[in-house]
Image 1 (cartoon, helix red, strand yellow):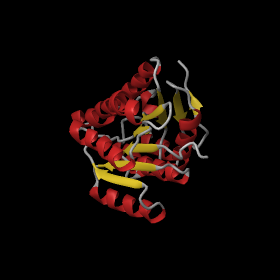
Image 2 (cartoon, one colour):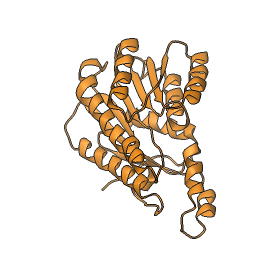
Image 3 (tube, one colour):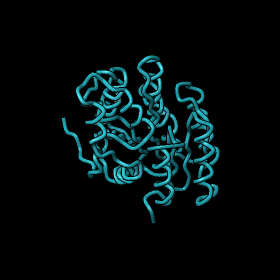
Image 4 (spheres, helix red, strand yellow):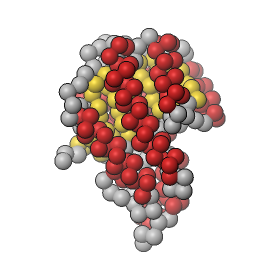
Length: 247
């Protein structure tokens, strides 16, 4: 029997990039059902078509603005209504916007905090299928190494790491794991390259790094769901195996 046989997951930012790859890996590993929420109608339509072709009736895709508390809670409610339980939440949605920085804060940090509390305090206690719920929070290498032209983005990713450390220090029936990807081959990666900070040779140095594919990252996340310890923080970069960061 698969680790995921009776489990149900909810993934934010789930219609493209890292989020969609995690959904596809969960389906390949036999998960009972998975909800993907996103803000892009186009991406949602594509993701639904791709997943339903191979895994009919095992996915639910919803347009959700994670910065709106009721929208996010509705996603939890509709997941329970369709699949009857909830065991895994992946707080993956993220943006870069240093001009409308309040939006970056709301998506990258506030929504992650809200997703954690909805999962561990409200829904897992009544609806998890086993003894333990799982939360995966997506931070970034910029939670450790700052980029001067991305101060708010870096601040949010530092915050996600701090959140994971604090929740990880609590005794809980929810396992909280933080992942910190390096460069990943997504649209967000292209935005980082395009920022062209005042660091010498920035664009060339970024391009010279080996971005991790979303598929490799997703496979690593699946492994960490099974084997990662509560409160652990993991770096995943350059298509190398994840390694735990200890403070």
